[in-house]
Image (tube, rainbow, N blue to C red; front, side, top):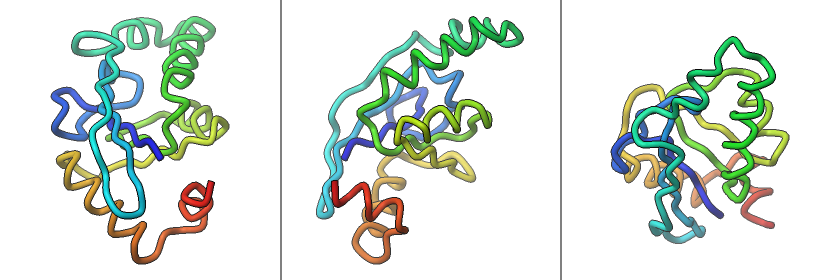
Amino acid sequence: MKIGFATTDGIHVDEHFGRAGMFAIYEMTPDSYSFSELRKFADGIDQAVVATRGMRLEHEEKVQDKADKLADCKIICLTEIGAPSAARLVKKGIMPIKVNSIVTIQESLERLLETVRTSPPPWLRKVLNQ
């Protein structure tokens, strides 16, 4: 399964879903993980999303476009996400996971791998069996 990490530097999970100009994509199996690619939406902050806040239709279109381009991921790790964006991801079969503080992508992957190996929650078990 593919996992996306909202990141500013490709090393840390340190960005809000809408603001994220880049997502580090990793492939995970029950035994390991490997880097796949960096998906860039913008250099730095994704101004296309940020600049349309308060412009309901335009903003929704920009967020939907981002969600569509991440549709092959089953999990997106991030620092923050608004409720409408989270619902949009879940509707696409993507589970948004918020980190409590900035952590490295590697640390997040290790924790997730340990969860996969020991006691995955039902939603994750279902994804792994697909």
